[in-house]
Amino acid sequence: MRQLLFICLLGVTCGFFSCGDSEDLDIPQCVADRLDSFMSEACEESEATLPGNLARFRFRTEIVYCFNWGACQPNKTVEIWTEECGLLCELGGATGLSVCDGSDWASNAEELAVVWQR
Image (cartoon, rainbow, N blue to C red; front, side, top):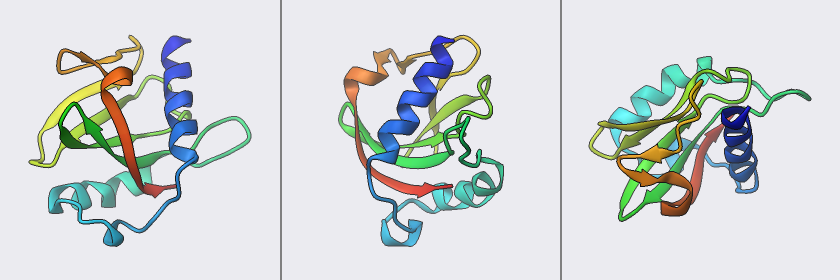
């Protein structure tokens, strides 16, 4: 239940920011490539679920990309990728992970932009 709440809160937070095309933001090519397949797999918005999205965050001092699958897949983790195309951590999921690379995500991450939202 905690992980579903975390994913829902993350989705709601992302929903308050305006969306733009990935072409409007200077995103790394590997993130753009991953986005192509992510777009077809992310959850669609419905009355019961929040949509999937890709958002850019500042985590501690680095820029990262958050692939949030949405609330229709509660056991799937939210993936955090670096600009250098490495998987930094996974959040949420069945165990409700909230620590990324040794730091609490919520108190160390600042959302900068929503790159794409379903």
